[in-house]
Image (tube, rainbow, N blue to C red; front, side, top):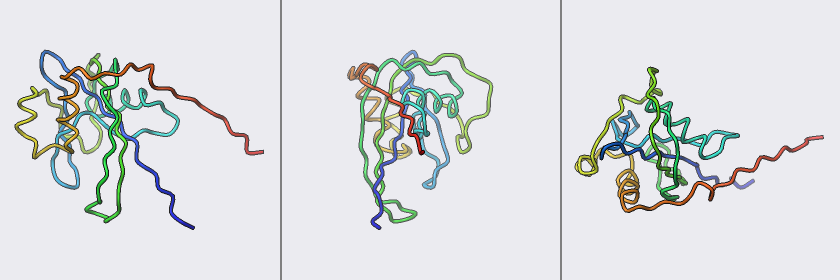
Length: 159
């Protein structure tokens, strides 16, 4: 039976406050990297629910999405397994709400607030080229309304 191809769906949050962007520093298989609060879509959640959850888990901030900056497809070959990997990334912009006194996700070392120029100066430490690209597109004013996204739940009866 042929293997079924499935892309990994991820979400990311762009949060700007006073010219600074909320970022996380994390341990990866390629060393310590910088990224937006981001992660995988979990079963039974909407894209908006996923980005709110990931921002809380990785940065300890409530996140209020206000727009969709972009949808990105990335393909690469895994260094670890040699397999072809495809990611579909949905990047949201929004505001940070309350900061919570809670542990960050496993592997997250700390949160950081950097300017766009500070972020550009450390591109060799970015988790992917999308980190800076998404900030630049946000600064260009790219936004799609959240109403563009629809989540439909179906219940299948196995009888």
